[in-house]
Length: 361
Image (cartoon, rainbow, N blue to C red; front, top):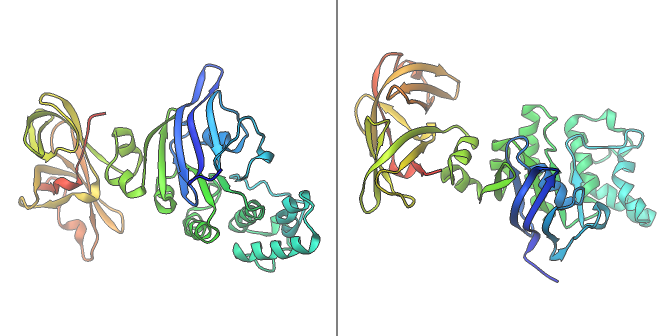
């Protein structure tokens, strides 16, 4: 049976006693896709990955890989391999032996094992290191060995459970790019679990944002960031400003919102709303600009409460009402930009309607 989907989850639920870890999830992961499960600790993303891998069995629902229902097959009977955060390398074996282990279990001829291991070590940029032991490698190199060991069996799907979590920040960022490039070269479907929003945005073709066992939004990175489906997604992905208000008037494509019963704004009507409905306006800090006079499509007056220099940006905290404080990030383009506005200065926060998310939940 052929299918365009590498992995399909149909109404999958997983319970541990009375705890619902995965709540009626349906997903379709395309063949050759870099797909990420993103969410906070305890949201169900790792349990979902373990269900795909056969390390857990669903309480209800069905999982298919390559168009074949997996039922209660154990991990070794599924066309998948898994890379864990701790890499799980055999410390007493050489790198060559670690990578060759799966092929040896399948009784692949020795000369073919040698050829495939060398090819795989070259693919993960570790040529000539087969004789070393894991403790002689750096964390990034050990991660590459774990990838080589998982990929050498040519699985239909590679499952990755926060594989970069043990690396320092600089190395993790470098490995993100390497991992995405590797996935594109080998063409295998990657299903990647992470709680790191930037990591998911950097590498993924699509992202499923999860919370409390459910998928709250499934979209591409740009859609997830620019058009969050609800407040949780907007808040979890990057930094977001929230303004609480009520719909006072509706026009053809605009919603008139009164923020904190004080500040009127007109925003794009991006979803069905009604007059009198309470809504949340979400705007990313970098979408704002601060000026002495009104210059943008949408404008709110405010007072600077704090100025923070963070190198690449100047971060202003601006009070617009007693209830609402907004964060504004302006790129540091040179000079003493931090002195443009000082604490106590009056200013205008402006932005474009297209950069506004109108949220109802």
